[in-house]
Image 1 (cartoon, rainbow, N blue to C red):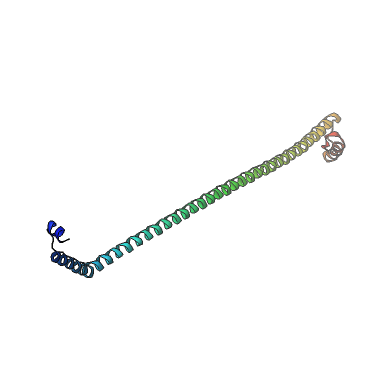
Image 2 (image 1 turned 135 degrees about the horizontal axis):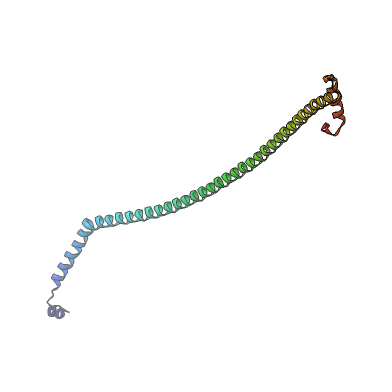
Length: 169
């Protein structure tokens, strides 16, 4: 084997020295650089894991916030619909009450008008009776040619009219 090493230009003491140097370098690197690099990689791994957890938490919070917003929107829509329905019910009730009040007012006005017409009719009949009595007394006075007791004639005429079809009964 010595010839193979010589053919390649290698010597056993230089290989052993290189191996010792390599092992020393590995030990020094392990003691000096390996722990800080491993610590740095562990820290980075932890930061990445924390970032992923924070992202997942933020995603869950965003989903929860979206669900809350949707629930609030649905609730607001329902409340809006309820308010609109209540307003429509109130408007309908007010409209119905206004119609009823208008009908009552119209009926009251009609009754007042009927009462006024009845009063006017009674006044007209009374006026007609007085006029008729006065004309009758004057006519009777002229026919007889002398002045009659107007109060007695008026009483007689009133009684006659009360019994006749002009009594209004």
